[in-house]
Length: 279
Image (cartoon, rainbow, N blue to C red; front, side):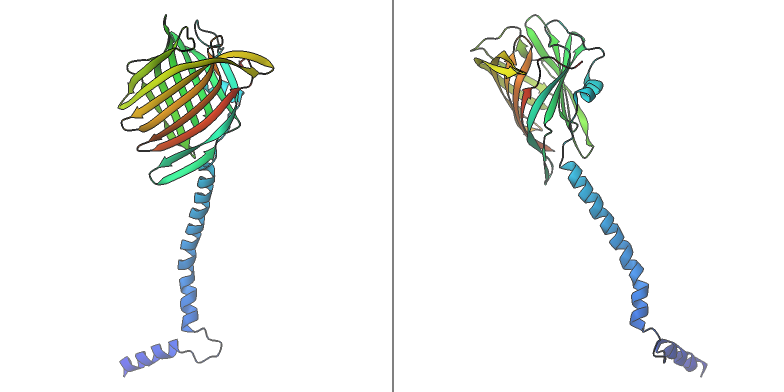
């Protein structure tokens, strides 16, 4: 009897006789609702974070001349014999790039301005190309009797603030810019950066001029075509309208396509805005 009575009380407790008594389905739905809501909140947060990251990753941040001078320039900028004038050179820019990691690829436009910062280094100078906050290429040259030899490169490419500096010493250091060049000259740059091999053929095509801030600047059109092999495969091509008097490109069209553990494709067209750099 006590056992059967207990069973009857359990049945009566579930099947409430009052019309306004909550049904078992209602009670269960109330109990289950917090379990559904917590994952839903987490999903919404993840979607929001993902959308924010994707938006940020798909954009490039411009860098002003003042900011580039602070971050990459010398204080005060000074000229080195056989080197460009120290300071920050501003270029009008157009182009875009694609960065990838595995199957994920992100396209992003480049800012309307790029900066090239020249600062002294022992026996030579640094020339830092700032396409954006997310893409910076620094090259260290040593000036010798024959011309400027490229000894070191630092490349920084980030996505939504994530990335690292790739710093490499070139072995052997190639002659990048002979002291005197003329139409018809050609040379070859072959070097290794860690396990990456680069083979670049350079030709001086013709003499022309480009107008900068109302002034015609005599230039030599120099074509550089590089093949990259090893852990990274692809190419780097640079076409420069080179001013021998400034030791700077007045116009610079660059194309890069590299694939490996990560990938990048960059197309940029830069034109110098003024004939004097910002200090």
